[in-house]
Length: 437
Image (cartoon, rainbow, N blue to C red; front, side, top):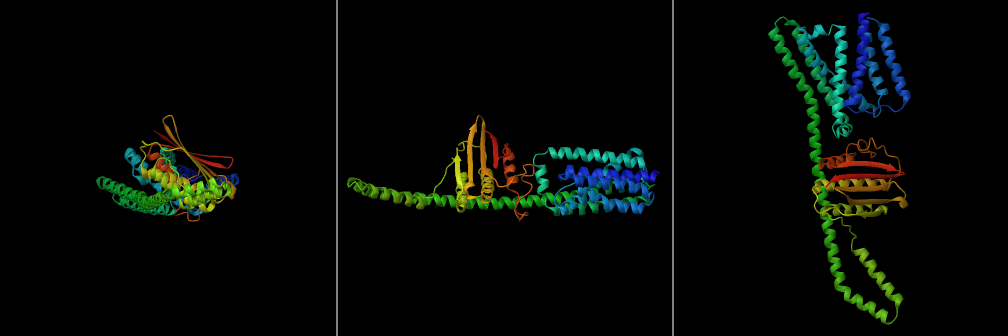
């Protein structure tokens, strides 16, 4: 009976610990369909009943637990199956870390070896409860960190596989050292040295998985920032080129202005009003064709981004409405402003591309409200937007190189102590940014 109780508790805590790891620390969303949850609940009850029915058949119980627990977790979560399975493997492997800490503390308090402690059913139950509490508190603290959920959701599947491999290596080393320590258990000084080495080596392997992810993310961030700086430099160069061309065309028009006035006066004196009107229309058409229309919001970098966005939206005949200006004394850096406006406008243009021509419009409003700078960008959308998952998913086929726009905006806004809000009402998507002046 004790063996059966032990196996049932192991099954219960295996599911519970993985649930807390996956839902809490790895931020995997819960399945939306109730039938999946009920089916998973049925499998979980079947696992417990099967464990009781099999009794002392350890191999059969272990096989059933290995096969059924991943299926239960997959039924209770949503997202890509491969990604969820990789997260499950990673979470299972990283659970050995709190196990190791609890084993060491309890071994030091009781004076018994870790292998002896693992032979008690009560100890395994206590360890399961402590593990759930530890990872639950850790998940609570991590999810309080701003941007943590977006960071985890944007991680590629390969990172979880690497973390799983590193933690598996730590578990193998830990198990090997534990087995080796049994031979020399009565030499306490040697046992202590072995345990210390085990902790150091295991921690290094666990940290290696996390360190690989951090270093690779920093590499990607540096690469992305370098690419953005090159892109923004090109936007600035294009803006300068357009401004110079407009200045040149304006000088030409000014040079010919006296001749145009003389021609108009000639038509007016002869009362040839239709010819005068036609001549004025020709002048206006010439100015429209030769002088590129620019909008100024009192910031050259943002003006350049707006010009580039309007040029990109010309093939789709997007209607633009831009109101307000940025204050002269602004503590936000050029790179941050360029990143914010470039990504906001790009998302709006892409949303307008999917709409009928009559609905393609973008409204940018910049205003000061008391001590706050408010930036609002509104555009129609074709489909409803999941605001909770905004920034963690992308509708583009190339998911590896896309889906970072909202994340980049949020990073730059939070870096400058601002706040970012998203709303959707009656088919209009609104992005609102609030900076304290």
